[in-house]
Length: 243
Image 1 (cartoon, rainbow, N blue to C red):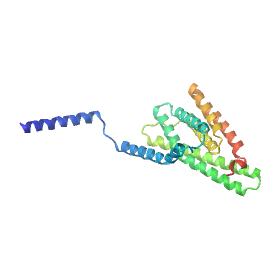
Image 2 (cartoon, helix red, strand yellow):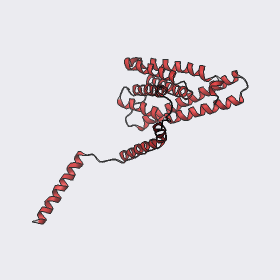
Image 3 (cartoon, rainbow, N blue to C red):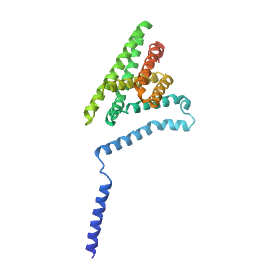
Image 4 (cartoon, rainbow, N blue to C red):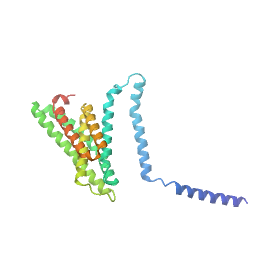
């Protein structure tokens, strides 16, 4: 009798496990790796932010919250622009644009650092303000062009790696480059303290695209032009680079 019960329990357990297996899909290596990466990122962020939290608790916090608001608005505008870039003709083409923009943020930060370093070098080596403006403008064009070239390469790489992904058309590639220009110039202005201007331009472009999706390329192009003018006006002055 005990053997029959044991056998019945084994069969029931087996069927229960198979039923659970049908309901719950197997956990893939990619999901496990992604979960581990997310956990590590959250833990690292906690370690970095812990000293600031202790200082705030002790009444020695950082700048006022109102001073941090433009940074949040710039992040909101940038996120909306990337979201609009992801609305492609097909879900795959939209996802390719978002992935390319996301992966390009690493090279974007490196090029921002290079621009800052080259500008400080020119500040020490150029003898007149006119020579400095010319050198900084050339560095700006090279860094922005380098970022856009990386963005194109990433877009093509994602398209090749994604099975069945359509090749980006000319208009969609131009629209993506305009969004990339807005993001990179906005990050550059933010790094030099002109975050309020960058936030206002990005939010206006994002709002225009949200209200009128067909005007997306025009809004991104206008925002890129405005940010380019602001960058040339603000960052060609030697006083903007003194530390």
